[in-house]
Image (cartoon, rainbow, N blue to C red):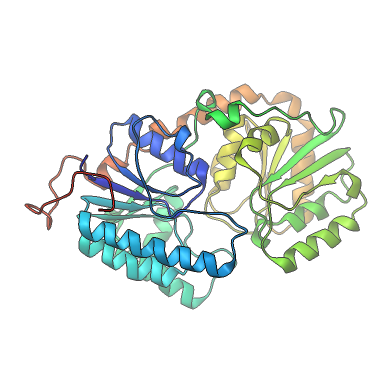
Length: 391
């Protein structure tokens, strides 16, 4: 098989990687996925071409082992690209260090490949809005032949903030997997019971980072009049933030009803967390787009979100409530409003609204950005390998 399209996820989220690849397969777009040990091979469509170059993704590896693994991965990736010279190469998981991975590698990809495509998930790194990072992002974005974003707002900001030509940007909505398309590990997991059927079950899900506002949510719930159970489903890698949140929970008047293991949530447990939740809360201080929101839509869970990035564009009255960011009383008020009208909302209706975002629909614009059916310009007549291997 000739690697016309090569996808590089850099170990990006399993759910995104799997859904995105399956959406392309449903559209008959051939590709090779540069994968890792963590890739959900069983969840990919039968016959999906993969090449495991990244190997282990275990978080508890020694730092030296991680560093050597990353170095070996990038050397193998560069060697593969130089040999195969694919028609298009799409990086959809941005990786640090941004200068080396975004600028240096990006320029090499553009020089070697027929077309280098980059998905922009964030206009700037979270909690790191520095001039240096803005410069690195500008260079990274300019290195690509085509940029993929998930919202019109991000497209407009790429044009205004970084001077990117509009013709180089394609808007592809963030996708979700159909509920009937759950992969085997999720289908086989037992659905845990609700923490309490008499209490409002509130969920915060995802990696715990400072910009995500877990501290704001805890403060908003201090004077919350409705009995609740809060589940914080996600790990934290910032020791200072972990200490701060643990102290805030210990001093909380409802600490016995706040549940946080502080560890990474295995994918087999994700469905259960969403199924038993009454409300998902996204109390973010800033963000451009959130895949967690689309997980809530997939499971039909009502949402409270702050009015940052494009979140408010997706959280209509039929889905939930929005409020101002960095405003504890506003967040508490949004929770109270949504709790008061939960019985008017339908999970089935939310899921029906979400079907427009299924991957099989959202990936359609990539035919344009990959230029399917067009001959590559500077690779015309060059020999390309047909086997998916490193040799």
